[in-house]
Amino acid sequence: MDIGKIIVSLLIKVTSKYRVNRSGISPLHLAAECNRDEVVEVLIEAGYDVNAMLSEDRSMMYEDHRSTTLYFAVSNGNVDATTMLLEAGAIPNLDTVNPLLVAVRQGSIELVTLLVEHGANVNAYVPTHPTSFPATVMFGMKYLSMLKYLMDNGCDALSCFSCTYGSGPHPPLQETSERDDLRYNTDTRRNTGEPCSDKSAPYWSSNNTSSSIWSPIQDQPCLASEFCEIISARWAGPIIDVLLDYVGHVKLCSRLTEHLDSLEDWEVIKEKATPSRPLMQLCRLKIRQQVGIHRLRCIKKLPLPPRLIKYLNHEEHNQEEFCE
Image (cartoon, helix red, strand yellow):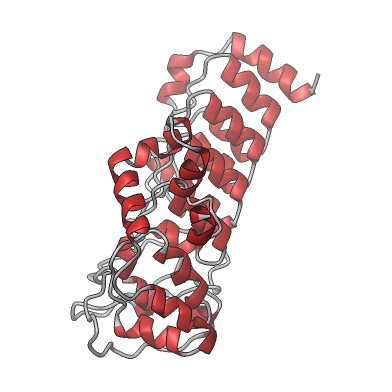
């Protein structure tokens, strides 16, 4: 047996859980932060609360204001610890910044799947950097298979096509290497009249060396960023193509249209958005809406033909295959 595990097992016998609860930090937090999976296991078996929250003063010591043991495990990319915590009843939506956003930003489909299967909010946002569409989409744009998985599980694609400017002219965006690399700068956000302070590197900027996706900015009156302000022209086609599979009738704003016009191969994607959408697509959307986001995984259990279930779950390669 690991020596650390032995020591912790001995300490548990003489430790007051009441005093631990009043200390503002749980030994589970420390074990997860240090990637001591065997200690996490012992503490869970001893009955320590997997949903214990850091006290406010301790949470403020971290740039992302993390609070839960689960957040520590996910931010470390620790699949084993994350699995143990979730199976022991850890709730994935307690932190100010949802751990799912951390997993998506890391590009870890294994962690993302674990969290979603245990009820993580696929439409999570970052409170300090408001967007008109889920932050899961923003961080998932680099990983198309992950973006599709999030959409399959109820992520809101429709909000990505909401635009203040519509078919009219959009204000110019500053071209930066961060935008080209899908590491977008907060300067692209629309302003209400007062300048946004720039006291720290943007949380999705390549200049930010921190692993955190939280970058508190004081006195920031900016409006929510919209999808067309964030997406890079370089990657627009495949991303929009995925999103269109999860919406009904939408009208692309002039900026998204401009992005799709930039490459001849993307003409078919633009045509995909033109009215009217196939009736089969609209029926699928309606059925999924009626099922509800929290029961989408139960579609496979419905007494329906396997081919229809595949279609409802977006598992068919194309509609022609479904109709064969």
